[in-house]
Amino acid sequence: MTQRPRLQSFAAHLRYHKGNLERTISVLITWKHRQHLMHTSKQMGQGRIKDQKARDLAFAKSKHCIFCGGSVVATTVDHYPPRAVFHDNRWPEGYVFPACASCNSGSREADNWAGFLSMMDPNINQPESQFEKNLKRLKSLDQTSPGLIRESFGSTAIEKKSMARRLRMNRELGQTYADLPLVKIPVAAQKWMDVFAPKLTKALHFEHTNRIPPSNAGLQYWWFTNANQLEGNVPQIINNDFGYPSVKRANVDLSGQFNYRYQVSNNGEMGLFVIGFRFAFMIISAITFDPAVTERVIRQARAAVEAYKAYDSAPGRV
Image (cartoon, rainbow, N blue to C red; front, side, top):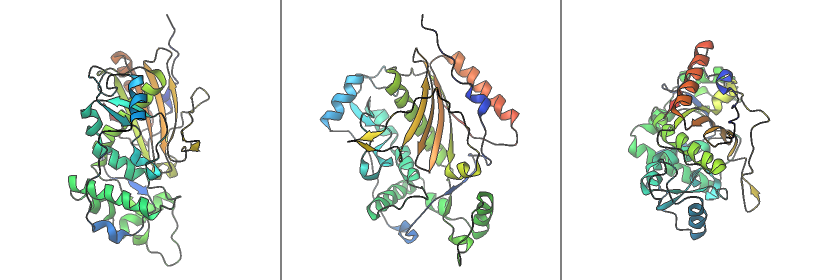
């Protein structure tokens, strides 16, 4: 029997960011044309993929949905990460997966949120066309979660001053605290991340093991904004044992938009992933097929929290 290599004890390295994600936390962004926020827009969806090449590639991997345990026959193809996180919808080659209609459409809001959030990199200048797409996503989410825009962009000057001091941001000449490009992560973001992070983890795990996670697989994840990264409150767990796949389309490197490192066991029943989306947000996730192992990992993670009480966290568990 193949011996399962021991994954790096990531729980011992966890360092949690300040501020509970169950409360609102700040995100540093570059945001333009705020007056456009009240414009109307229709909801964007992903829908069924009609590209025959993508279908052939996905169904060659499996005939069953990889997102709900592998017992349901796949009828659609899902691009994951979703095309919404990439400029001009130019997603990386190969990241297409067989999915049932329910799993494909069930992450629509979460995909829109991830697409919006992934563009909140202060180091990039969005073209007008990309800005309009992102605006539509935000307006769509505001329709299903009324008050989202107000919650995200309604910070007072005093609140922004507090955020800026925490992030050690300096104002430009003549700039007030109210003008700083800071927003809050809305409460609804956690429910979307509870859909997005597990689905992405299952897709990447399948991509590198060809094993469909069972419906009772254990999955633990943490996510961090670029503000958390600026504060230095992000776990450092990557070592030389992690794989670093090439993310390309037509020989164009897309790693500046989406990249990840991973470590999986020989039998394909365990995986650890560190995933980044520009300098906007990142996810650390672990998946195990054995419930007993899952409980042990979670206990280790909780022990790490207790060991570092100076930090708070909001891990997502599915």
